[in-house]
Amino acid sequence: MNACTEPCAGPNERSTGTPLPAFSPRPGAGSPETGTSERSGPDRLGAFTAGQLGRLCDLVGIDAQRRTAHQRVLSDLLGPAADRPLADLPPSPSFVSDDHTPVEFSLTFPAGGAPVLRVLVDPGCAARTLPDNARTAWAAVGRLAAQWGFRLDELTRVNDLFLPPVPHGPLTLWSVLELRPSGPPGLKVYLNAGSRGAERSMEIVGEAMTRLGHGRAYECVRSYLRPRFPERASLMFFALDVGPWAEPRVKVYVAHHHATAADAADAARLVPGASPERVAELCRRVGGDEPFSRLPLISCYSFTDSGADRPTGHSLHVPVRAYVRDDRAARDHAVWLLQHYGIHNAPLDRALAALTARRLSAGVGLIPYLSLVQAGRQAPRITIYLSPEAYRVFPPREDTGPSGPADGRRAVDRIS
Image 1 (cartoon, one colour):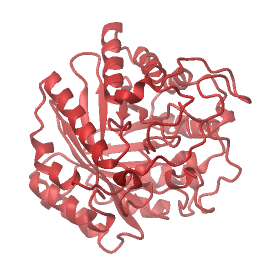
Image 2 (cartoon, one colour):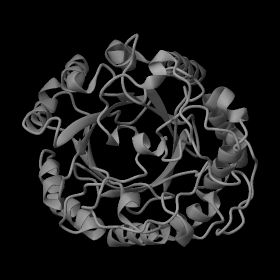
Image 3 (cartoon, helix red, strand yellow):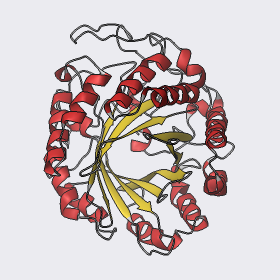
């Protein structure tokens, strides 16, 4: 979920059909890498990520038949990109992951429950222009909805706002599948708040919230943003739950630029029941009290009740990879967070082993984000995001302080 950690200003080069910039793939992609433990697996993007997905499905108790079905859906969403050798360039500069792998996994750990597996995909990743990306992604969501009998009413009510003829920014539409032991997956759709230019993102998101009946509840977020936009806070994603969810959510993601733990806590105060102290505690665990200047902290505000006058949930996303030396340190932060909320860390360690055979100390980015989710009277949930690292393993960082120079691994800087 790395796309808009940079402001989404101006049309992306792909919108004009510009060829891909040069990209340096991980040495020996799809084969063992010098300095790390041996890596095995298929040498094509679809098979590689499907293998990882299958092992994660086993971890959360999804049976073999359903696991195969989930792998097939992942391959279908990747489209032509699924057959590309890992030794080739990424099909397009997809900003789902730092190395442009158009897939990201995550595990959500509810208190007292089994972890829930999700997979995020850029369905238009094989397209060479943003308009083609949008058309491909929209068609893919339509196929899934038809296959599973989902209605797209709410998405259709706002798609004209976020899928213009000439999109701006680094993405158009991403899909997230929540993989369940029974029934079809839960489907989420992520849209680019800056699709008509970053300067119009507040206007566009406000209109979408009004159309969906959440205008009153969104007003406090809008009021929070006005004096901070765009230098200190910017809009990233607009997200919708699609299909038969018990409590479908509309979500708005806000990036907090150069924010401190206290700033992140203030952002959580907009949501009744969310604890600012918990938010500040996580931030200080990772970065102390200094501003997070490499990659921004991110708030996600969720809305479920059209009669409410405030958001109903808040999530803090901490880009831990930018503030640790390596994935051993990131894993230690993740374990602390899980154990702090009474959650056992063994499933996380099994998930890391399911994704890679390399030493955690040999790279950074396998764990890109840690997230603390608070909603109403529910116990806090923890989400750990996991990168496939299909194309590249980034070396350990030499500097880890929050206030250092801008992170060289940001999407816009990685392409040279």
